[in-house]
Amino acid sequence: MKYIKQMSIIFTISLIAEVMEFLIPLPIAASVYGLILMLIGLFTKLIPIEKVENAADFLIEIMPIMFVPSTVSVMTRFEQMKQMLVPLLVISAVSTFLVFAATGKVAQAIMKRKGAKKAE
Image (tube, rainbow, N blue to C red; front, side, top):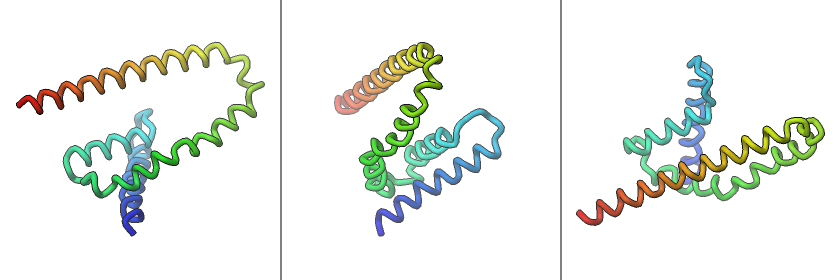
């Protein structure tokens, strides 16, 4: 029952995000709206972490399985994508580097912030 309640919260946030994508005329994906809503909910304690933690852990554990269909689709359409191979590789390399750099900077900032709180 706990998982059903937690998944219901997550799916409700997703539904609200889908509605926002439909109503707001900006080129932003519903998943981004959902992440922002969840972040705001968690920071403001409107959604206590305990209310979604187990379901979120479950979703993270099964995440690799979710990429199988898209990977198979890319493999079956390789001939169509061959002409775009160089731009795709460049975009993938640049975006991977940017994500690594941003993640590292955020992790360093969080570690510094936690270190400063412990020192107080």
